[in-house]
Image (cartoon, rainbow, N blue to C red; front, top):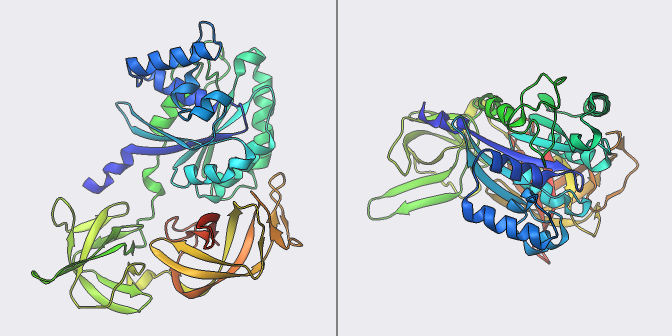
Length: 418
C-alpha cells in the first residue's frame, strides 16, 4: 500500500542532561554517515578553531546553529536535522538539556517515534535524564535508546556501563507506554558504537546506534483501527458546487463509501470521494492529507472530527489530563486559558490540580495545589464547548492539547488526556 511508505521514516529526539553530548552525537551520526557537505565541514572546522580547539573538529557545531548556542556551548532551541541511509530516512530533533528549556524538549519530542536518552558515563543517571525519559513516556514515544556516552573517559569499563543500565532499568519500571529500551555504550566524540562496532567494547554484543535506528520497527505503532480526521479546512468552489473537508488523517483508515459520523453535531453520512493532491483515492490511512467529499450536505466546520460511528471518540466538556507546565506563573484551580486541541479551539477553566509528579520516584503528590515551571501533574479541566477527544495513549493527535495565555498569546502548558 502506497500509504505505508512513511514506515521508512523514523522521527527521533535526543534528550538528556547538560553536556551529555547530544549535539556531538548527532554531528557524529551525520559525519560518519557521510551526510555532511564539504562547505559545512569547513565552516565547522573554522568555528572549532575559533573556540580554541586544536586538531579535533567539534561535531556538535553541525547541530548548534544559533550564535548564542555556539558562543555558550549549549543547546537552547530545538534543532532539526534530516539525513538518509539506504535503509531509512531520519528526522532528528536535538532538544536542550537545561531544565529551563523543558518546554523546548516537549516540542521537539512531541512527534518522535524514538527517543535517545544520553547518559554521561562519568556522572550516571541524573535528574534531567530521568525527567526527559519520563516526558518521553508521557508523550507516547514507544521506543527508547539509552546511549551511555563518554565511555572513552572511563576506559570503556563494562562495570560502569552495567551500573548505569541497572539504575536506569529500576527507574524505567515506572514508565508507561514504553515498549522497549535498548542500552548502547558509545563515545560520540570518537565514534565508538555510533555507526560501526567498537573494538573497545568486545563485551558489548548489541548493534551500534545507527544499525538499531535503521531496523527498529515503527510501522505497527500507528493506530490503524480508529479513523480520525480533524477538519482543518472547508474547501468550497461555488461554480462547480464542490465542497470538501480537508485535513490530515490522525488515525485509522477511511474508504470511499464508508459511513462516517461528524462530531460534535452527531450527524452521519457516507464518503462520496477521497481527494488528494495527486488525484482521488479508494482509501486513505493515518498520516495522509486528504479531502473528503460527503454524500449529504452537512454543517461541517474547522475543528470538527470525522470518524466511524462504531468507534467514536469521547465527546465532553470535562476532561482529565497530565500537563507539563511551561510558564513562570503557576497553574492553579480557577485559572482560565485558551485550549488548542487538534484543529479545534475553545476556552477552558482549571477545575482542580489533582497531583504533582516527583520525577525521581514517579510517585504523585496528591496534596499539591499548583504546578510550577517545568512541573508535571494531573489536572481537571472544563471547556467552553464540547470537545471530541481520545486518551493520549490511544491517539497522540486527538489526545493532546496546548494551553495558551490569551493576554500574552504564550503557550503555557502541554497536555496529554488521560
